[in-house]
Amino acid sequence: MAGAVHEGYLRLPNPVRPNRRPMLELSPDEMRALGYRAVDMMVSHLAALPDEPVFGTAARAEMEARLREPPPAEGRGWEAVLQRVGDEVFRPMTHLTHPRFFAYVPGPSNFIGAIADALASGFNPFAGAWAMSPAAAQVELVTADWLREALGMPSTAGGLFVSGGSMATLTALAVARHKRLGDDASRGVIYCSNQTHTAVDRGARILGFRPDQLRKLAPDEHYRLRVDDLAAAMDADAAAGLRPFCVVANAGTTSTGAVDPLAEIADLCRARGVWMHVDGAYGGAAVLTDEGRAILHGIGEADSIALDAHKWLFQPVECGCVLVRQAEDLKDTFRMVPAYLRDNDLSAEEVNFRDWGVQLTRGFRALKLWMTIQVFGMHAMRAAVGRGMRLAEVAEEELRALADWEIVTPAQLGIVTFRHRPNGIDGAEADDLQRRIATGLAADGYALLSTTELRGRTVLRLCTINPRTTDEEMRRTVRTLDRIARERVDSPPHAG
Image 1 (cartoon, helix red, strand yellow):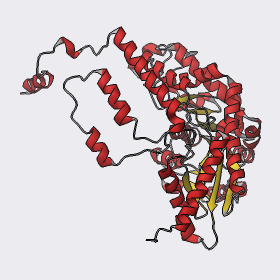
Image 2 (cartoon, one colour):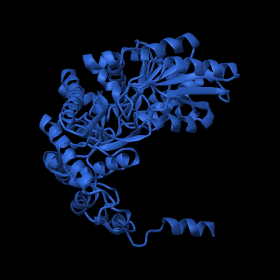
Image 3 (tube, one colour):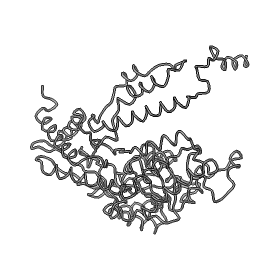
Image 4 (cartoon, one colour):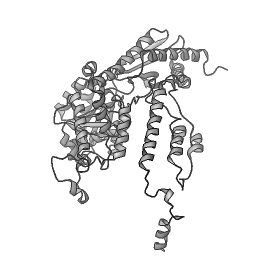
């Protein structure tokens, strides 16, 4: 019976015909034609993007009706499938690369990064072991080192490319736990402000920490972690028999772009033997500019830093990076060499990135950032980051020139938050107005922003890190917001 089941599982319903391509190959001419068509689709999309609506979505029922189907038994041909991808897969989406996408944190990628991703997929290097692709490993070492140097970390530091800020944070917290707590994490405590990204909550949960082992502290009036409060919390926990072992400091909070006092936190952590991790997922890139370097003073003193190159370093997703002050700490935390990997673990000088993080099988993520820097150069990257900071200032200037708008947090690291406050509207009614303004802008299609909550109140928020956004687009976005806001005030939700 077992043999019959096995044979039935393997038996194809019909004899394989040559046109079914059992080797899963296209001819060289077909591959070229498909590649040219795919590139044409991307170029047409990017060229037309500024004239397209930013926001696009579809209901689950619509997507089920369009895309729910059994797997086809017969191939449909690449032409038809590619057409369907363009019409049904990429059409109903919100464009993170759009020059007027100002919600959350944009992903203003670049075409060099996209081509690098295609090349990495086509050549398909195994980036987990030096012996499998030594140049891929070396490119990753070099590119991570460029980031290390820009951040002011010592030559002992090193890191690897991961999927994004969440995995970078998880990796860093795993190293901190291993180096500071060893095998007993039951009394360890992590500290951060209540403005810190939920990647920290998620990472702590995955690593087995209880909710009471993550201490979230109220920030100051500028949404920055208070060093005195941090020290007091550590003292109280130590007195209670707990083990303060890690502080997560912000280098650009998601809501406001706030930067914690990094140098002071570094001094405190060093004095107490506590690991300092910096969440620079989007804001860390500002260190490329003179202004950003001053704002992020002390970031190079961290024990670990998380970065997202698919945000303010203009790469396609996924492209995160984690850097650790002592690169050997990564290896000490993650290295495992089972019998089946001993064949390519022969030289101490060779770097096997499987030993530095969670993944064994991993793609060549570093190629896209390396190629982007090679093609455009660091001067252009620096100017592009600076452009994002300037755009937030343009938005703030335009808002201040209009009546009934209140700046909640001024432009910092490419983020500005604000509220529409006409006379007589306050409290919950004002909160509802901000949400209706955001929804109205999305429906209008010209631009997209998001809301957040600060001190219990809903505020509007612009994140302006796309270097292809023009000053006029920024100003028109604010004027469009003003028009929509006044329409919403004149037509409150209970009207009609």
